[in-house]
Image 1: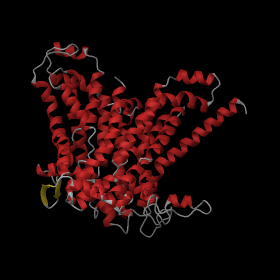
Image 2: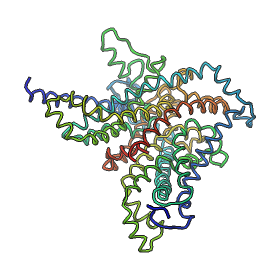
Image 3: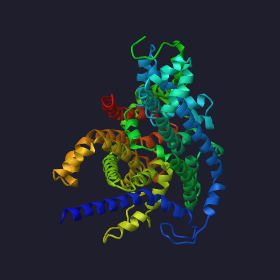
Length: 273
Length: 291
């Protein structure tokens, strides 16, 4: 076999592998879309009709998805906004100031990355309930409004910023908060965007904590509502499929909007801690 | 003033910046972590106040067959790690070598990462349906192969949840591999190619060795998240008995279905000890890099 032919063979194999991977990534989601549009008479896991949009209507109205969608948007925006703000605030002195206790704070923050929420969910529930957060959207937001991971990500971004820019602002008489806001934040934008992306994905997807802390249906977030539908509409899972399809749409739109920030380099940094 | 700091400031300033984060992490994470240990030594239910009982919860766990099954299943679940690494590394290599459309491919393979886990679980529940699910339709094309009971028969139920974990995760780890591949100088790979190494030889002798730290790192991170798995099992294989699930669903069941908070905390402490081993390895790895 000539070198050229062998080269062409590798290219072909590459395309075949790419096609298989894309199929793996999107076929399950597409299969869900098919199921969501099938009427109860249609056989699931086939491409046969009759087709209908009733499942979406049932999910939205009977299944209470409209309220859940609203709650999810609220909780996700609050969690993502707070995660970026609180992490960026905390990271600034850790990256730039010298003060007594800095090392201790840093080590303690580091230690919280080793505490899995799944392990401490019981006392966290009791603490949140004790603070009056049981069955409230604030309760779904506040315990997860900052993460040690976010603080590290921001700290690393700040450490990479040259000091000259802050010095210039300092000489001009700007306050610490002013410098943080108008010098540090804009320069750390790619990392902040990545943190926002992770926070949005995490909050939108979170099931365990909302499941524990939320009680009334009118406060359910989308994952909790979908989980409930799997039980309530057990005989017609197509309603839950429709709800699931509706739950993907906003996050995919958000992802496509933010995808130009999605650079592998950032991921390399994000796992370093 | 220490060398390297920008300037003097009022002592209160750094603490004002730190305060919100410290309060949240302190109250909810450090506070909960301390309490989980305390509660683990108490008889404490949804209907009673905690009462100190010493090691009783731990002794009860040791004689609980269901707990041992759940922990064993958690270890079985760790097998998702090699699957994730192969899938993620394969994806990274394909994306990296694609001349045109690499960006689009990267985007498409990242889509499962942004999909909410419960949606991924519902989708796979459909694909894995036992009567005529897509996967069983494909399997039964093979002569002699019967449909697999993905949603009810142990350990296929675990494997079903692992498929969801792998599907949802490989795009994320692919990005880390792509970052790792950027560290492998193209010139090194080209030099290997000029020396007559084929793509396989270049991969085995140049690319793979230089990706070793990335592989180890991903193995540790994905093992930690495998030990913490909940959504995939809770949704994909709904209703499967607790002894066929992993540690976190066991804890959830104990605490929020049975109301046995104290026992659930003891189980949590044991799981934490297991995860800690992996976390410490992770800490060693990450603090050695990038400094």
